[in-house]
Length: 171
Image (cartoon, rainbow, N blue to C red; front, side, top):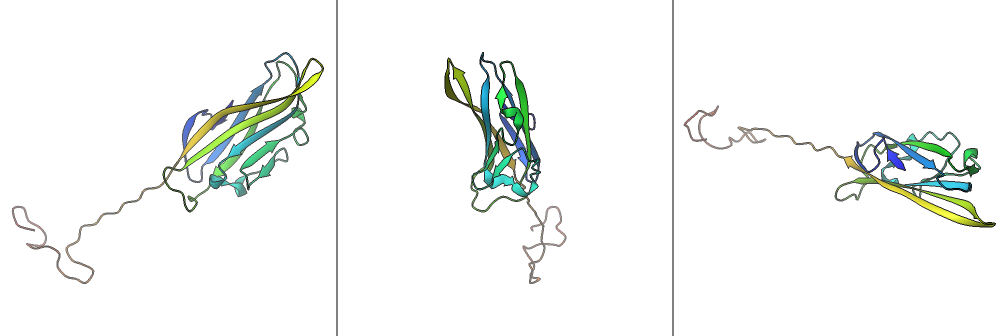
């Protein structure tokens, strides 16, 4: 199961927020899984790739928005015995400004996939499992300013009537 900041379906994040992805996995079958490869696919437009602290266990592919764990970098993925469990965690930040060309509601989507090998009899078979999709709506700032004016920038009186306005008088 995939979660972002402890939420597994829909959430909201602000620009610049940290997002912690947890991928909980378990082998609920009767046979060991070997050569596990976990892939986390992110919408790379919203990932602040410079904020990622890579502890050496992940492979980052910024151009495709992929974060990948393999047995070469994370030895616990060499084999997962029946009943075995684990969690992979990854942290990143949302960009501080919206990328150009974004129209509509900005959404940050993530989904995890695991590929492994499982013996069925004496025959190795590839197994692929996809997680739930986690959708994080990106909050944007809305700024509005209002002002009341008696004169234009050229100091021409706006409207008619007394200044300051008086109750019952035309303005």
